[in-house]
Length: 343
Image 1 (cartoon, one colour):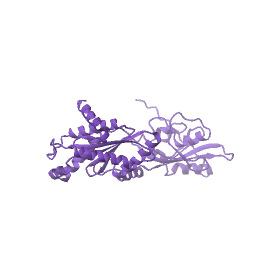
Image 2 (cartoon, one colour):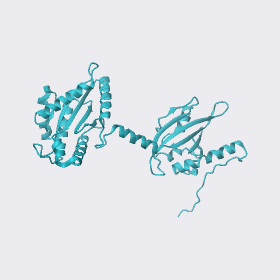
Image 3 (cartoon, one colour):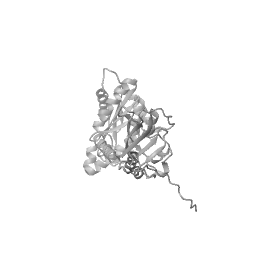
Image 4 (cartoon, helix red, strand yellow):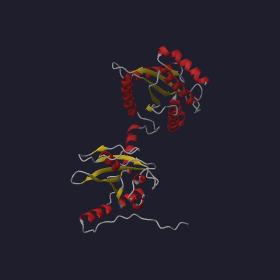
């Protein structure tokens, strides 16, 4: 067993009756987590509140440039480092927080998630970093103060989810769908890319509700929502459009690709084998209408919604449990259905 005593780096304060000594002692006892770097990025002060926040003791970092270890698993620049770099210091090879200037003296402010490896849980920290300069304006040190605003951030995220998520299925709600469709339409217009939309409706859902009650109907919608979402790419959006109807936005997806996604959704829902005696196959199925548009200044997203709605109505009229495309592409829908069945 190694009994070598641990060498501790202790701040040597000037006498408290001297102005500098009093200021250093006050900073050390400040309840706000604070650390100070010299102009070379070495730690001069790591106060007790910073130790409590990070779990890193002062002796571990004083005189070193290892302050990042209190916040990240791998080396990254802190806000204080960015202030030094902005005043002529050597730029770091690692990335740091996205910061904004908050004054004429090169002070920076940022908020970001930090790993906090010593305490073992991520925290969302708000940081302010300001340069300390001499009478000639030469950088002497940088002071960074920190605030743990994790609870506030989590509350903000929860409120945002309430505003954009459907409470039953966890999918995007109608408001989020409308906003996203408008944004994707503008992007498609700028990039001259196709934009596809699927309208998905649960067949004979009233009979299902009558047979299994509203709780059973809710569970049915939740399982279908999961099935639909499982077929999506990262940048696609699935929303609960209303009642038993879902909408899927497929950016940069041509009609053929959209039809393939639609048929996969139809098959996946059918394979859930949710019993429904009101349907031809005695299981819950969906009908899907698909449409694609190349955004242009003289049309708008409502026309895409209308086209997908029209295709959905046609799928219902043709017997349900099928996909339907704009009338001119009906042969394509049949070919894709057969191809997906064989795959």
